[in-house]
Amino acid sequence: MTRIVAVNGSPRKGWNTDLLVEEAAKGAEAAGAEVARFDLYKLEKFTGCVSCFGCKRKAHEGECVIKDGLKPVLDAVKEADAVIMGAPNYFGDLCAEFKLFYERLVFPYLTYNAENPCCNTRKIPVLLIMTSNAPDTMYLNMLENYRNTLSRFIGPTKVLVSGETLQVKDYSKYDWTFFNPEERKQRRETVFPRELEKAFAEGKSLLGRSGKETLAFLVEGFGALQGGPALRTPDGLQVQCLPHLVRLLLEGFGVAQSGIDH
Ligand SMILES: Cc1cc2nc3c(=O)[nH]c(=O)nc-3n(C[C@H](O)[C@H](O)[C@H](O)COP(=O)(O)O)c2cc1C
Image (cartoon, rainbow, N blue to C red; front, side):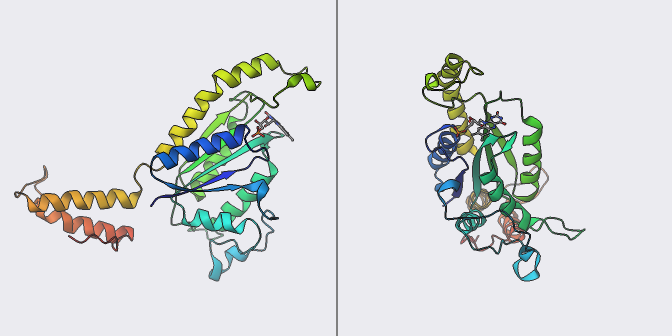
């Protein structure tokens, strides 16, 4: 079973960030994944990185040693095949609660070994969602930094932005002349549903086939061919040899114990 972790970094349940994260999670479920959901603001108390360097000790390399409310989330990500994470923009950056999670997620994989600066040997796809008051393009540079760092230490990262979000249901209760409530509502009704669809599609395609499943699929396919007539591949390799070669590949990927033996 493919496992996905979905992390909502907004305090507002049922609002923009949460809805997009949830839609991506539903997309992943539609693709057959099992999703573990976490709301950062509902966890037991937790901190950001406290610079204890426990994760740099040889005995705990790559592992955050702090045992607080965030530990179950970090543990779940370690076991996951992909991760969805979302946060609202606060003061030009992803919100503070998200940054606590981000520090504790990434820093353990950063080593101070010049030859091997990242000790994560199990990279997984990441979907990062940000919502903001400003238009979609306002924070692309900032998001590119997150994308680069996440890609480097966690795995290939895609970013989805939803700007000019609806902030409150009834703007007439506030002195908010800075925004045009009608435009916000219209955007909510016309653009936001498309963003939800995009989130669903991104969640669904997050994994496609996991590496292990793909290899298992290949082995099965080649196994079936093995029982058939002797064929030669375009470069002259006899088909009967292929299962053996694929098994060697599986061993190389560390998944030889997949229960498939040809
Ligand atoms: C404390 C705070 C700071 C914010 N700062 C910014 C900001 O700098 N830029 C921006 O575009 N939106 C800013 N916003 C707006 C939120 O990013 C936006 O409304 C977001 O969609 C809220 O997400 P939510 O609906 O999931 O809570 C801020 C909101 C709050 C509460």
